[in-house]
Amino acid sequence: MIRTVLIEDEGPALKNIMELLADEKDVEVEAVIDSIQEGIEYFSLEKNIDLIFSDVQLTDGLSFQIFEKVNIQAPVIFVTAYNKFITDIFEYNSIDYLLKPVTGLDIKKALQKYKKLENHFTNNGGLKKLSNYMLNKDKRILVRKGIEYIPLLPNDIVLLFTENKVVYVVDKTGKKYIHDKNLSEIETGLDPEIFFRANRKYIVNLDYIKGFKSYEKVKLQLNLQPPFDEQLIIVSQENAPFFKKWVVGNL
Figure (cartoon, rainbow, N blue to C red):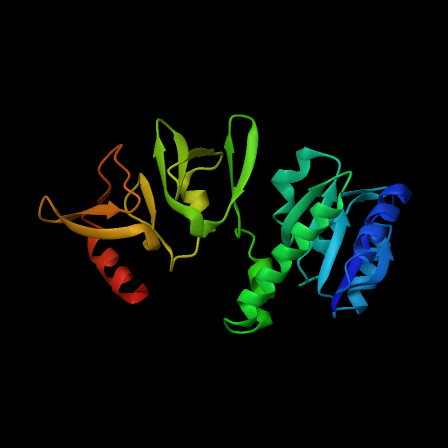
């Protein structure tokens, strides 16, 4: 049984999501919270919750304040009527977000995502790792294409690079997006066991390195899969020795 808490202060929206969750036989709603203060008080005492559905905008402020005040380890599915919050929600244990009005299909997909994450971490070291995963602020890399913001999983990113002071992110399908931060800022939030700073221009994902060879004797040229043909990806002379150790240590 998935022990669930709802954070919602809008009557019709609460009624809708309660009815939808009632159709899910493995979900039990433990509590309904309608204010920031009530949320802080509840989660300060109750820790044994599996999943939270939370509206963003409450009468007394944004629900993010609850997660800033209390160390909540349960994953959160945010429910909002506004796209503008997408750039913020992944900072607060979020695994998904739903736009109002929420449908039964929305709920089923969100619960499937939660169950897949739960199963993955149960089979790979225990549920504690699921909590740690949710607390990692950079579990999604927020990129944009035009005016649309898109959260990418780090494992789906082949490389990040900068060109003409713009940072681009390339995913495993070859699609290219723009990131609003610089490479150094992004690097601090990436897993160093997965991503490597090849030089001042490139950060690469170990899982997509097909091979490498010597370049100008003291540098290395990387071969990625899928291939990235726009430019040569070179590990600098200073970083080449560290790269070899990094690859061997993370294989």
